Image (cartoon, rainbow, N blue to C red; front, side, top):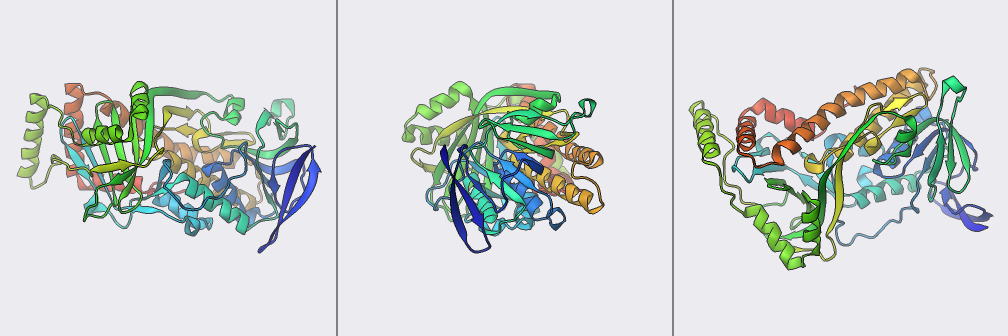
Length: 471
């Protein structure tokens, strides 16, 4: 038998009660272990844990037993030290969710973004949004800090009806199937322990077992790119480091996301072979290569140059400034030791986000290229929408697995996610080439976007989560 600790909570004290059990995972809850739950969430990353807290925060669901299964060990809270190399751009919509579930104030460090500066290396066309910002566009937050805040909220404000089981990897699923009189979902862990639930939530990421068991069509491909991440030190400047910079260079975009007055996070999308080269460079070589790609002048086609000039003159004739200006990016002075890493980039979209007794949230339902920073925000939008709809359903007397509710969730979220994903994919394909006709088209498009105020405002609202409302 392996040693297991059952953490029992009251509002002020955490007291471990030790016992011998035949499983190797840790559980912390006041509830006695039982097989039957109303909701089981598979996956305890940022999106899955946020969904657990959103359900726990809704008093209409206080009598529903909810279980979260996470295959990794219990998250260990860390003291603040060097910045992590994995960060997220949290939109206003997502930050409001965090406030609603009492997580926002527990995030110990977050950096507000007050401007976005985007420019094309092949044409010098650019766009910025500083004249259209009302408060912050987004917040750059380390993923570990988000998890720290989520788990701190769970531990400091325990609920009798919610349970987290760590080291609990799902081995087998048997989903609701009315044709075979299977009225509840069955979940079996690698330890052999089994559970049943009325509603199963897939939040395990892009390789979701729940999604595979649903049998829904899944459109997916890999980009042949990796996202190289690192923590960077910037040259001291009088200007505040509150701008998100993105330069589209041949091979993939470079994004600098502010973390403090002189620290930024890097996300550089490059072909896989190139990523390996960047990871194998010395720190000094890497900094030189990065500064070179942020400032290098790329020869322009005479056709692109003349067309840009014509558009610029036409816009000035009607009293509008174009988006052609030479951008001076921040200068990088150092990369934090051992902060460089890389992860593969891919696309994925499930044909259905729900079916009888099952729903998908986060990357289990949709996966996008990181160039727009919208991936995790789509997931948090799923959380806010589904949690609210489930509370509404129970309040009006429906079951927790109400089919109409799950179908409404799918409709609302696909209505938001599909156009967002299509726009991100179009941007990726538009900027992955330096072909003259494509460069010409995107240069003119960027100038016109910069010149059309309502369009810029719409982009800002979408980036800030303005269209991430539930209804």
